[in-house]
Amino acid sequence: MIILPKKVVFLCGVKMMKNIILFCLAFLFVIGGCNMSMAKDNKWDKTFPKSDKVNVEKVKFTNRYGITLVGDLYTPETLKKDEKLPAIAISGPFGAVKEQASGLYAQTLAQKGFIALAFDPSYTGESKGEPRNVASPDINTEDFSAAVDYLSNNANVNPDKIGILGICGFGGFALNAAAMDTRIKATVASTMYDMTRVSAKGYNDSIDEHARYELKQNLNNQRTLDYKNKTFAKAPGLPEKLTGEEPQFVQDYWNYYKTKRGFHKRSINSNGNWNMTSTLSLINMPILSYSDEIQSAVLIIHGEKAHSRYFGEDAFKKLKGDNKELLIVEGANHVDLYDNLEKIPFDKIEDFFKNNLK
Image 1 (cartoon, rainbow, N blue to C red):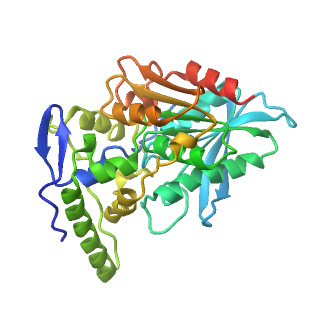
Image 2 (tube, one colour):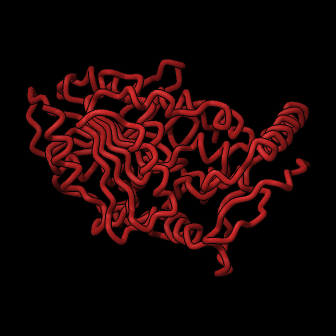
């Protein structure tokens, strides 16, 4: 059994609270959820109603590490055989599956005239990769570029008009991909987390170097035990029931992930757990080191009341150029931008992509 550090703390409201599971919060409270299937049609396994204005096709593609990824390709119902449209690759929230928020974004953007690919990242959902439920700042960034590979070779996609959209933790990975992949012409980060920052420093940067060292000691001790036991210890997940004493943002996550609103059987948060030692690579590899070199257009969207708002605002401050924009959605919390159609600024997203994928 792992002995957890005693000095790890995080901010909850205005009070600094001791909490030895902070390093897991980056996983357990931002990961996507699961869905009990709201649709009457058994073939429709998404958490949102099906649109009759789009067609959906399950597709597979392989990333640079040889991992086969699975996605849902949404196309306008009016798409002609030889027509070429701008395309958008979409993933997130962190730990979610394509049947949740990313699929909702993809379907909505397909209704607006784009080809949109919502995909499961490596080691999660229907995508391949062993062991399961592992996160990697490198591989998860690569997953976006692999999606661009696929779209660039799709007969109905204009390869010079490809953008990406990352939600929650994949908002940060999307920015990292945009800093590396010059084929990406426009990037949207919605309600983003910087997973490497929160893993290394905790919420509101409340972990110091001494607590971080103790955290790494415990995680590396766990690696020894994992090898010995031939298994992988799991990080904690959301509680099965709320007590009412949890921080508001935890309650917000629970009300999305643990209810019919967002529950899906393949998603990590409701039916599984991240591997605990996934945190190690996130601690040691900051993903936004070169985000100031992004030359393509970027739109960062965050909720006014989101506990994670500082991730988006700080990421925006580092960006350079006159084609970068920060949009704060009035009254929205972090989870509102997963599926609240009254809060997600789809008209703004549509205009952004149309103006920059032309």
